[in-house]
Image 1 (cartoon, rainbow, N blue to C red):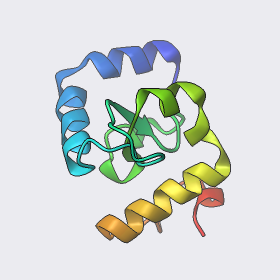
Image 2: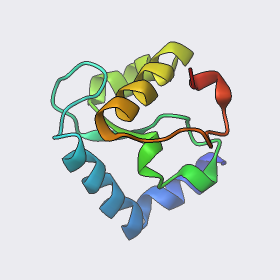
Image 3: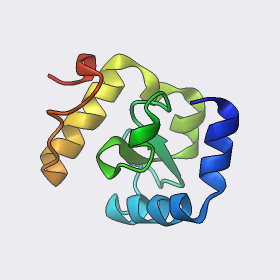
Length: 102
């Protein structure tokens, strides 16, 4: 997904609804550091447009963690997916990027 496509998608009303649902689902708490969250992180990045709105690959995250790219390491992505699987019972057997699934 190009940066232009991503900017277009985040402006859409559907994204705003999903964003609010994820923040509420995660109790407005950063899933990396447990501070107050105001952003929603695409755990696999934006390279999979079909997963852009898939709640299994989205997590609430604070501004600091989002800006520092701390959640973009392979280990951090694995930990986020594992945390969501344990908390929410998500199944990642269809994950397109198997390096993140243990």
